[in-house]
Length: 392
Ligand code: ATP
Ligand code: MG
Image (cartoon, rainbow, N blue to C red; front, side, top):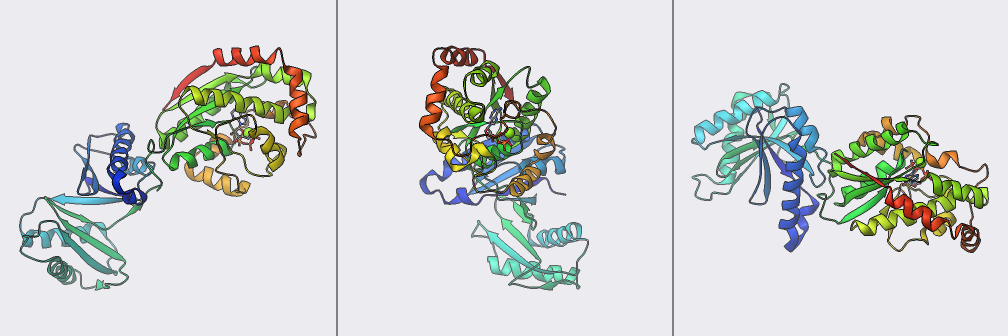
C-alpha cells in the first residue's frame, strides 16, 4: 500500500544558512543509493521535507534496506499519498489505513493532523478530533492516548494528503560529501572498515589505500580488501581504492632494521605513502582503525612515533573502543563475515616475536636512516606502480 517515503533528518535540520546545501546533498545521496534498486523513484524536497516517491513497481524491502544505508537519514516513514477528495473520503482512507497497517488493533493511538493550506475548512485540531472519532467508530478496541500513544498517526494536508505512522530508523549522521574527503588505510582486518564507516557517517567522502605484499600476501587477501571496500561503499558511495605494492619496501626494512622495530617502521612508511596519496587526491586527513593498546604498534608511544611522519591529521575513530565493541559494529554494518576470512595480512607475516611497545622516536629515526639511499627509489616505484580500483 505504500508507494512513498517521507525522509526525516535530524542533525542537518539545524545547519542554519547552510541547511539547503545539506538537504541537496542528502537528496543527491538518496538518488545515488536508489539507482541500484529496482523501480523508478522521484526524490524531491518540498517545504523542508524530503520525499521519495516510487513511480513504477518497486521492491519495498530492497528500497528500505538501501535507504537505511544513507547517512543523514534519521527516519524513514512509509507514507500513503492521495489527492484531496473531501473530508468524507479522508475519513474512509484513515480507517482503511489503520485496518491495513495494523492487524493487532488492541492499541492506543493519537491522530496528529497538520495542514499547510490554512484555508482548509477545518482547523488541525478539528481534523485530528474528527479522524480520531472515525477510527474509534470503526475499531472500538482501540483507545485514544494523547500523551504516549502506541500509534501516532500523522495526517498532513498539503498539495496532496499524506498518512504515516511508522518510523524505520535510519543510520543518522550527515550526508556523505558535506564534510570533505579522507584517505582510509584499509586492511583486511575487522577494524579499518569500521573506522571508514564511522568517519563517512560524519559526511566525509572516503578514498582508501591498501598495502599489498605479493607473494607474501595472496590475490585472495587483496580480493578480501576489495570486498570490504565494496560493503563500505554501500554507505559511502564509490571508493577509489589505491593498491600499493609494498613488498620491496617491507623487504628493505626487514633486511636493514632491528626486527622488533619492523612493524613501527613499516607503519611509518604506510603513513608517508598514504599521506602522499591523500594530498594528491584532495583528502584532508588520514583514517586508521587503531585503538589504544590493542597491539604493540597501537600503544600511545607507538602511535606518537607513527604520527610524527605526517602533517595531515590522522583520524582514529575507534581509539577508545574495546575489540568487542568494534566487532559488534562490524556485524551491524555487515563487514564482519568478510573481515574474519583467514587470508594473511602483510603486517602479520613480517611481525617480530617481541615488537617494541615503547619505541623512542630518535632511535627509530636512527635505524630508519639505514634505509637512506635505497628507500626513496622504492617508495617512488611503489607510487608509480599503484593500481587504482574503483569500487562501488
Ligand atoms: P585492522 O583490523 O583494521 O586490520 P588491526 O587491529 O589488524 O587493524 P594493525 O594491523 O596494527 O591493526 O593496523 C592498524 C591500522 O593500520 C589498520 O586499522 C589500518 O588502518 C592500517 N593498516 C594496517 N595494515 C594495512 C594494510 N596492509 N593496508 C592498509 N592499511 C593497513
Ligand atoms: Mg590488520
